[in-house]
Length: 200
Image: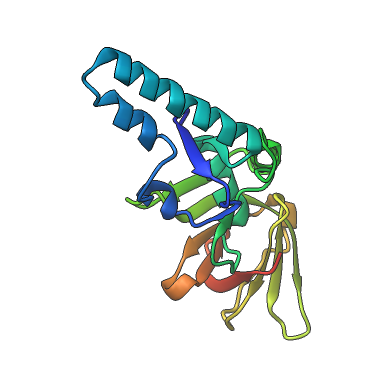
């Protein structure tokens, strides 16, 4: 979890799959220097590559991001209809504070949540999200506000029965991926899952 990544920041916007599949890396010049046999030539190459990398870092063209920050950003943006993952706070050199804050807030809001990822490391579902409020809109769709600040709206006509003996904030929710970017939600009341979309 403490592995470091270097991300080029014309890349304030980057897609999550691209994190592991980039064709080039800002570290490539260093790796190329490593293959030089002559000691003095290798050292000169390494010095030049490090100087260039330091310059890129000072300008904010390259930012070091740890895997925890990336995963926190993925959790914070889970369910949003955006083509690319934005890492908040990384538009400034040395940023990442916003991501760290989001991770802290998520941990505080739902400390017992579990994030399930697929073989590619993408979020498959999140279990144990604490519910803050459940209401209905004019169409009778459930609006579920989670303790982490996310708001989800029911998009099908599945009947969801809530217990009158149980306070709304005693519920937790599981959100899982459906087909074609859709999502399902299930409350921990033993009921059926229903389609939902994130609206906030």
